[in-house]
Length: 469
Image (cartoon, one colour):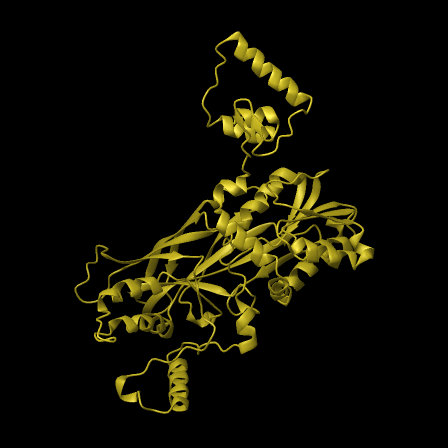
């Protein structure tokens, strides 16, 4: 670190953070002091290049890592930037007209926030939001993008010269790049599954601290994670049945049953991403707010949300349903972008955490618990869910004995539920024609007050969930 400092290879703020974790360097003799002074003078005269790996008298220069590199695995980052460097994935997001249309409306309805202003587009991708800002009259837009998408963005912006002449593309991470001036407004699309997946919200907050002028605006301004318990017997059976393969006692002469328990747990460790009918919810939802204008980056390392609901029906609770929305708090118009069930579907869909052990509740019964999200270096979160309800019925202790169910899920590895699930069949119906089973299952599902499984065009299936890395 000393050599890196002498070579001027690290920024001063990086060095201060490194020295907070460094050992103390003591110059014991006058000769060492003179040598240090000489090296410092050489650095001031730029006789040392400061390149990583350069040999020095007493060692070599070690490159300083950015904040992004210190908390994210290199392999995850490489996959992430490779993913967003491809046009087919950018097209998938652009074709989400709820997403793209809401951003366009939020910008154009709030021209007063953009006209004559300096804008920074954080994670610019194809550059579409930069072009929106320029259309709204921005004085200049700095489009910061770390992936190879910058080459496509440059061509797109150059092909729209009436706007592109006011846009500068900068390749690099927001944690590392330098800008020539402060921004009046930040614009970005940093949302992932469950709002926080991919951990780009942290980069958005870092960009705020590094680039945004005092009293500057952020589009989006606020995010909310919404939650409600749900009941979906067909989803539960579908997931449980996946592990039936491991209940075979004679698979080419091999007993697979020793692995059934692990397989069962593994399937229930996957959050389910799909679009579900809001009638599956059994109580009013609650939400947790993230204020992007004031929160700290560290607030996103762990998110702890207490849960409290009152069931509207007597049923089995199969888990917690989640979705999110974000607010563009413009000076003229406030506009929300929502991924709620029952609203026009986005490429984010909704997410459900399914309990391996469902709870039984009566109408009016309280359901409590905790949703705890812990960030990890693969640019995602581990989800810890606890849900509880008081026991009821004959033999229940009125003093408050709880039935509790817990789950540990990996947000980076969800179950993308693309096709219509098979209806659960009693044993005596197994030989019925498929058309009869589908009709019977759908009718029974509606009779039970549950929604039939979603059907999606196959071509859409192939691109619908490419947001996940």
